[in-house]
Image (cartoon, rainbow, N blue to C red; front, side, top):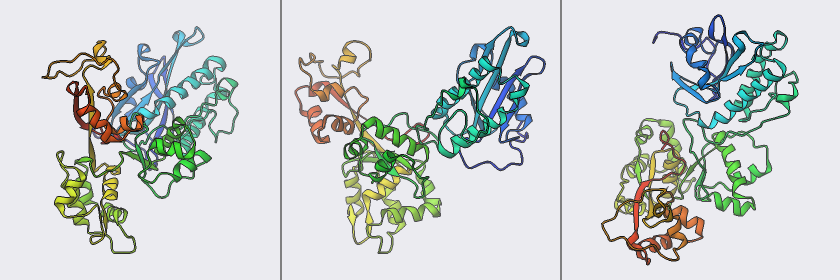
Length: 439
């Protein structure tokens, strides 16, 4: 099986959605691919080996199915239509999105589901998929969807480039959805108001909405989501929606707000900075304190990033390295260096998450509270807002931003407040812009 050809002669397109595959269950031939865009992207041999996975059993129809094999990931939402007009009284088909195997397809699942539902509506109401007069248009639809998703990160039915009008059952829905996350490898599950967007590429696609331009103008590596919403007079939900679109285009990444008191640890990806000349240049250019002077020494920057430990704050690392946070002699802006390293996933932040052991969720039994050695105190009659957010899911940063407090005030409430004996503080990796595969 290792020797099977994976791709046809067509070069792989640069976009993340590599191909769309339409498959059917033939009563005589069994599961088989019928159309794909681009043509012959996935070889017949691979399709034959995976045929039973591309068309799942009727029990799995209506569910997202994801299979990784031969360096590719196939994500579909198989459909099962029962009707006496079909052979064996049923018709089964699937529309699969094809990605590189390492791509996290979670953010694409709304597209996969919607496209499958639109195809099902076309077939149930108009026999569009099985009628010889319309069936051949399927390939054009797949090509149009591929272009829309890869070109504008939207799904439209009918596709913007499709020359024919589709029946009302599909065209009236006009399901349009922007890709919600940054998808190069995987996606953060949620954009939180305390997270900070950072521009990750210079030559980004033009934005089409005024709100996007306003949001983009305020992305400076310091403003968090709530700051941007306040300054643009937009709702947080609107800002999050615009940031999801920018994430989908790969324009930004999400990090924490860089501060001297933060703690960071290097990731395994830091080795890539040492071996990539291009990343060398980007790093020193980005963190230069004065662009008119020679860039900082890369060795100094790399050593500083390697010096981070879980028990040292950023300020302590700088002090031990003999580098100021804005060091004019070395022409390095350390906060910008860390910002670059966080956006590039070379560093992860070690955040602090308070847990109030008498939190109502724990007392009610819906969740289990960590045990403490101290005698458990009675729940406070009027717990503070800080304690009510101290459930282990919210870090000091997020609690402070949500309640309009400083991080120091939140920490003081947990460590020196009236319920200090009931509060544990757990150190965990920051959730900002992170996933299991993309720290």
